[in-house]
Image (cartoon, rainbow, N blue to C red):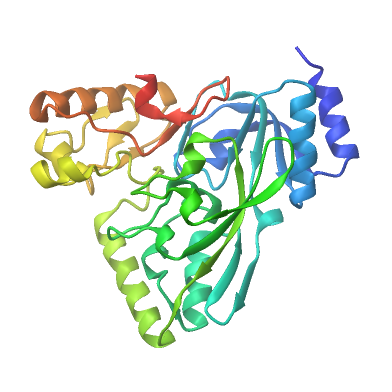
Length: 319
C-alpha cells in the first residue's frame, strides 16, 4: 500500500489545490451517504488536476472524479484512493453573443440564470437540476424530455495522462441520458454551448414556473440523488415513466431502514435519517425485481454507485 501521508504531502507541495485526508464523502453527496476518501482533492486549475492525475498514476492509486455528488451513491466504507472534485477551481461562464463557454465546475442553476439574464433561451429546463455542468454533460442530463446536448457545440476534456483535447458534438455520441464519456476515462473540463436570443423577462418567468412545478412534484427537504431510474422510451410507451411504474407496484413510502421511496415521487429515494448505502441498494434491488415481475422489463439506474475500489458504474450492475 502506498504511503498516503507522503502522497498527500507531495500533492500539497505541488499546490494542486485543496488536499484533504479522510474526508467524509457524505458531505459531498446530496444523499448524505458515504464513508471517508483516503485523499480528497479540489483542483485549483486544470494544471492542478493534471498533476493530481499524474501522481495517482505514479502510485497506481484509484481515482474517482465527482462533481456535485447529486447522481452518486458512495459506499459506507468510502474510497481507497483519490477522489477529485471538479468544483470552483474549474468554474467559469463566459458569454459572447449567443455562445457560452462553461467550466465543468459551474453549478447548473447558475448557468441557467446567467443565460437567462443575458437574454439567451434554451437552458430553461436545467434550472432545477442540482449538479455541476460537467456531470450534466457526462449524463447528457436535462428535464422535460430535453437534454443539454441540444445546445452543445464542443466539449473540452483531459485524459488520465493530463493531455487536453476537444470533442465535437458528433464525437460525443449523445443519446438520451448517455454520452461517450460514460464509456471512456476522459474527464470533462468544460464546453462551448450555443443558445438562441430570447426575452429575458419571459425566460425568467418560464424558469420560475419550472421551479414551482419541481417543488410540487419532487421531494426537496430530505436528502436524495434525484431520479434513481432512467426513463426507458420502450417502457415509457408501454407502462409510463419509472415513477408511475414504481407507484403502481405499491412501493411509494416503502423503506429499508432510513432509505425510503419518496411519498412525493416514486422515482426518488430519500434519506430520512441515517440511511446507508447497503439499505439504498437493497431497496433498489427490491424495486427492480417487483417491476420485472409486473412488466417483464428491468429498470436501469440513472444513479451510479462508487464502491471502495473506485470503479464507478450504474448501480444496477452491482445487484
